Length: 214
Image 1 (cartoon, one colour):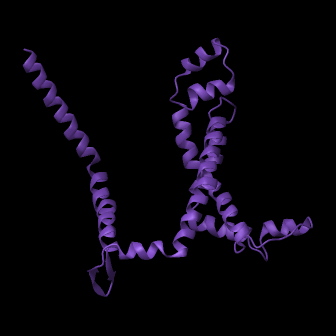
Image 2: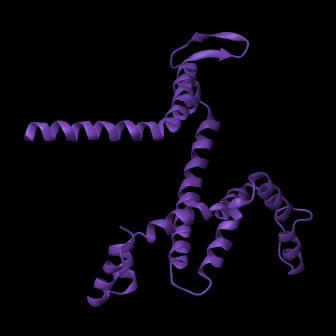
Image 3: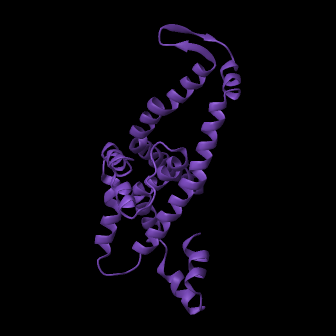
């Protein structure tokens, strides 16, 4: 009798697995065709001397040796690390802070959520043109305001001292999607945890540290 029940459970598990695979099969197919295969082919071509007009010739790790000796590669790695540490991490923290504010039970909550998410819906091309206009050294709105106040008017888009900081600032424009993801997670935290913390006399930081963030 136990063996019969086990075989029935296995059949149900296989059926559920098959149904699950059917549901995710479009994503799996897209991943294999448009992500996994290009990754493998890119790795293969990186080990060859290849262009669009000739067949690939095997060169091994020669291309990687050339990369290591190229100063521009190390500069690009430095810029990537810089943008990650001073750009991505603060943007994630900012999105979490906004999500915590939007998770509060206040009047007009849906309106505030919409306002913070709207910039994400702006097409990337339109947002780029908008920022290029705002930061233009000659007729940009920001420099116009700085000139009106008698302050220096830097070349935001071409001066290396200002380029990366303003790229980071522009990144905050698109944190709406991350904010919504954080907000959805925050709403899944059971309210009884906070009620128990209130009974124990926990303050706001302790509740965030030991309940919300984990």
